[in-house]
Image (cartoon, rainbow, N blue to C red; front, side):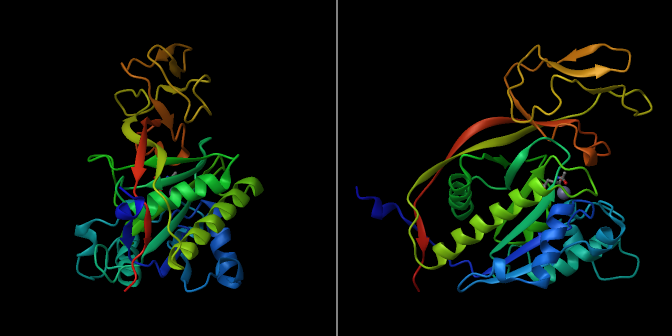
Length: 315
Ligand SMILES: CC(=O)N[C@@H](CC(=O)O)C(=O)O
Ligand SMILES: [Zn+2]
C-alpha cells in the first residue's frame, strides 16, 4: 500500500492566536505578547492571520495569577452559556468575551489554533501541552517542533484524563496547544526561559506556514507523558501541609519515580516514600500555583503516539 492512501487531508489553519497572561504573574508569555503587539514582524507568516492577545489583563496589571477565579479553568459549558448579568466573577466574564472573540468553542467559526503561553516554577524545561491524543494537526506540529529544537529537549504533556482535564482558555480553538516553560518564579523574567519560548513559537508558526502552503508531513510518532494522577502534600486535619517535596524529588521533573523512592520530607525530618506499584514520571513538581489546588506534583506515564501523514485539503 502506498503511503499516499494514508494521508489525512485537514483544513487549512488560517487564524492563529497567541495568548499571554492567562495567568497574570507568568512573565515570559506576557512580555512576548506585549512585544509582538507593538511590532508583529517576527510572528507574521504568509497567508496567516496571527493575533497576539493578553487574555487576563486585570490579573497582569496586578501581577497575580487571577482576580476572582482561575481563567484557565473557566471555559466550562456552564460559564460560557451563563447570561451576561452584573456581578459575574471577572474571569467568567472574560471567558465569555474570549469565547465570543475566538470561538465559539466547538464551532466551525472558532480560531484554528490558540497557543497559550505559561510559565511554571517547576524544573520542567520546555513543555508542550496537548488535550487530545487524536488531533493529527497538533501531533504533527509537536513532532516538527521537537525535531527543530533538538538537541534541546521539548517534552509533551498529554492531559486527556477524564477527571483531571480542565476547561482551558486555549480550548476555545480547534487546535488548542499550551506551552509551559520553566523554571521561572512568578513575577520574574528569566532570559533563558523567554528565549526558549520565543524559539518554540517561531518553529510552531513555521510549521503552520508550511502546512498551509501544501507541504505534506509524513507519518510520525510522538513521545508523550500522559497525565495519570494528582499527588497532594501530606496535610493535617486543618488542611495545612505537614511535609515538603523531598530534596531527592525536587527539580527531578520527567525523571522516573519508582516504588520506594523518597517523595516528601516532613517538618520533623521523616522521609515519606512513593508507594505506587508502577514507575511514574512526575511533573509540575512543587509548582507554586498548585499549593491551593492541593497538588504537590502530577504523575504521568510514558506513551508513544502515532500520527498519520497530513496535508492541507485542496478545495
Ligand atoms: C502553572 C500553570 O499555570 N500551569 C497551567 C498548565 C496548563 O496550561 O494546562 C495551568 O495549571 O493552568
Ligand atoms: Zn499558567
